[in-house]
Image 1 (cartoon, one colour):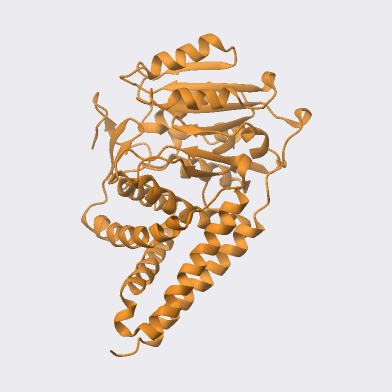
Image 2 (cartoon, helix red, strand yellow):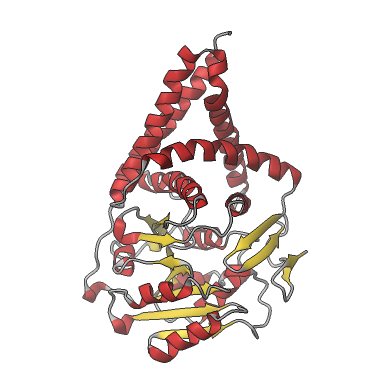
Length: 395
């Protein structure tokens, strides 16, 4: 077999360079700090739920258990046109707890928004806190989540965010968890290096006056990713975004309902990622091409000679292991070895699938969180897709 070209060797080295940069960024990320009672701003936690009767009770319990001054905490639970017991659950929580507000979108006039964004916009419109924290109906938040997310606020801070971990569940949850952990290394490292580019939807917060000043989600130009639309608001005025990766700011989420929904989720993230600015689209395209080249080389490089391939392959495994170790140690978690092995196959499958799927169609079908929604990322702004009564979105 012919020896691999210098370009292929440089590709393997480039991966190690990227891993080194990510490691530096993650290790430079500040740890969260616990707020004292006297420093706690007023907070509204907003959750939008559709057909989440199975998961919502545990989410509500974790929110009710938050360690935060009661006179400065509001919980806003939005039932977004559910057909199960979700509506009854949010009503029961509001009836039992004075700081809980129950809302329903069933009779809400169209605000041009779909899926989670519709419920969030309705919930934030009724929020009274200086800060709005957002999580999902299938999430569990730590007891000191709010205190730690807001623990390092400065006058310039406009957004805060934490990390998420996929809770134990079906076998495909390990695949989702491995990909989630790896992808979050990029956002955490960027934040640690002073260049945050995103916050994750189930674990983020925005200053309410910033949200209102920009007209809310109803005026944001996006089709898929409401979390990136919120991030754009927070950054528009040169605001400071604080991102954390430690245990008090870690939110656990439930695995997706079926294995193939992992790819639907990845397509939604990628589709949303190209919306904010053309630079995002170019950057993501370059990362996809580079990542695909790396994983294809990892899978086939031995054909050009095991002696040249093996050191690079071992180097990739060591780099991935270091990333997972640093990230999980910060969050006081245990990273099993199987996650590292799973990641290698998940990277290859995902990076081969995504370019091909987007070459075939830009339309994104989001199935999850009680929704079955079709997005067309080419239609942004106020001209959005519309939802039928069944929950399907059509152009």
